[in-house]
Length: 128
Image (cartoon, rainbow, N blue to C red; front, side):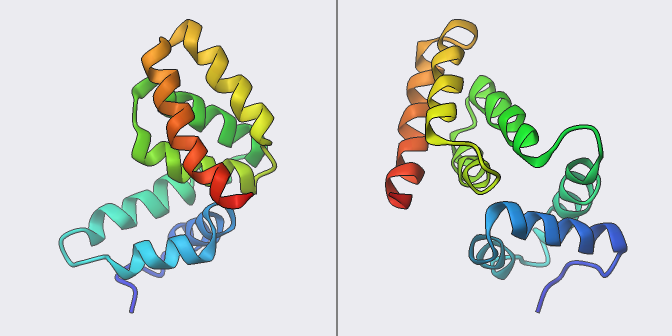
């Protein structure tokens, strides 16, 4: 049983979250929701996936590229791994991810890019 609300933005966000990250991943994440973590999952699903990812202006592939780039810059490898999966699902190719990470060496530094390559390789190698 999900602890997420039936609010329309939450339900729209849940659909987008599943489309981008995959049903299996999202359902596993929601299966770990507790009363303590439920408010955070509600916010992530409603506001990130239900509002931001739903906006017109840029397509899902572009949103994935932007998200992956920001996560590299911030050094958030756990979330990067999740969003590399989403980027691949949204049509970003491994070659495009490679170029993003190489580009990051100039703006984010080699350590950030090295971590990005390591993190993304786990996802890309598992899909091959």
